[in-house]
Length: 281
Image (cartoon, rainbow, N blue to C red; front, side):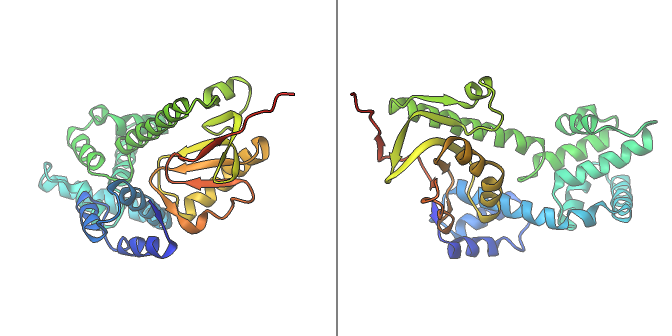
């Protein structure tokens, strides 16, 4: 799904004042019925992550942490079964999984002899049954399963979706009888930063020569695309030549402005691939 900048801005504007809940996503789908659920979810998640990055610091002051912790203690003191942490996160407009991390770290600082390591915290968030307090474990669990944009559950889903689309791309390349090297094969050859697939024989797509293909199971907005250009795509171009990026959930049309420089954007696997045959002397 390719959107104009104006279409994208209209969707993003609708997300400014809505909480990151599944109910909000359903309302977004009703508002924009022509857009796919996957595209809207990707935009929804990316816009919320931008918001969290902008407001992250204010939730991590010592005053904020103590205030949240005391409100948590008071809340579970009145009713330990109520979703105290989840409601607190929604009230202060912060991701439930990140709120759970704040409270868990503060709890462990109070009850453990040594400060908890990041790996211990991450392990407890992945498996709340490891938390040495049953009430807090249940509160953290509620936050994790109700968070649409952050947390270990979301990370697992994103990883699985990303892998699924890489497998899909591999199958499509094999179906077209295109010879390629994948990321693992390239790393075995000593490359440290590589696209998902390098074509051993270049192809042409819409009149542009393609040497490599990168799969992105997300929507290509300005923020993410510019970051990818800086961190990945131009490095690939510099090392391997021009290439193709597939944003499976669509992208902003105006971002496809580097074709002549060697980076082509598509929202699906191209159907008009032309194989470049070497002439035999």
